[in-house]
Length: 194
Ligand code: 5GP
Image 1: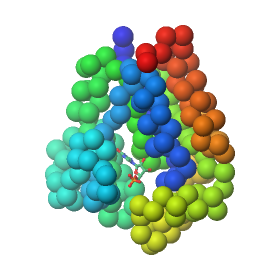
Image 2: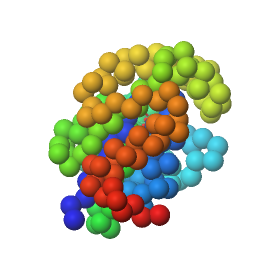
Image 3: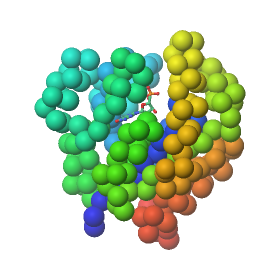
Image 4: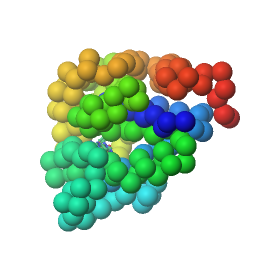
């Protein structure tokens, strides 16, 4: 079996990570691609589980060694990237890779993997609701939230370049829609492993 890729991109706070976690619980052949990043861990985030947390210097060293299949400075001073070794690790186990990645990174990966990838954009109901969700989440400082909101409008312009857009008005509906799309793509719709 050739390993496939599922790419989820969205503005921060659109519900992408919640959808990704739900898919990982429900389809065991999907494995999360742990990205590297140079921001500090949030409370409850674990090294090597949520991210490989690098210092900026370490991150730059990996760029210079060409260890990344893609990377972006997603927010000024904060680098995020996908290590080539992470994809190789997951495919070697016979699993499909699930990416939670920013919009530019998502489009870049779709270009690289082509037909072997399904790219999905999660669209929030509105910028106002996105802001409310980010404030409620409580994991970022007000100035970080402001930066994320400013970026969201710009990111939403790229939604049409993805294979599919999921409109997240209701998180449970969005999760079901995502599962169906992914299983259809992987062609294993009648046989999900529980
Ligand atoms: P957060 O700081 O909220 O965890 O993530 C910020 C953004 O960076 C999110 O949109 C997330 O999907 C994105 N991101 C996470 N990993 C990667 C990666 O490997 N490459 C790129 N380009 N973006 C990533």
